[in-house]
Image 1 (cartoon, rainbow, N blue to C red):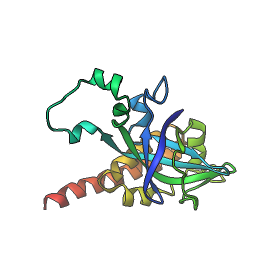
Image 2: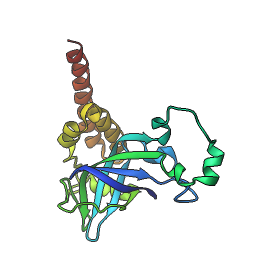
Image 3: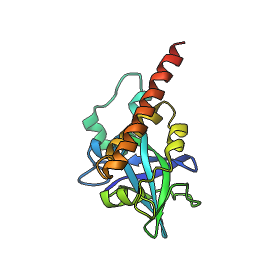
Image 4: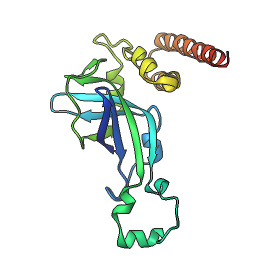
Length: 197
């Protein structure tokens, strides 16, 4: 499902995408489709780049207009339809790796994502493939990257990812994920105490 298009970047692994709306398509994505922790894909010619939504920004031209209003929203639709395009939802995507010939690689691709590239929800099958090594074992090679780049949201984001992974892994791997989650929660608790001190 197409949910957004790339409109900018903050670094080689941090991209900004604009969520498509009713002016783009008849049936725009639902808010759950572009929520925190949703995995997305961007198709390049020879590989599928995988990312995760780690932040959201609401854009509105109303924010800069603090004076009197000279027209209503209905008049804007009629006389200035582009006004509505100045409002929207931007999602920030952290690139985690890519799939090449069905092999999961948890590092940044060397290619730059072109502007206007379609951002799609990652299918369940590709989500599973992306989290398995060549022997079918659980792979989370982006763990430290998410902690480092996710800032205050890094631990929360990893908890969301772990919750999703628990549905697709073996019982043995579920135990490992439970330990990982305990460690994350412990780090979050320490972070709260350290910020108060």
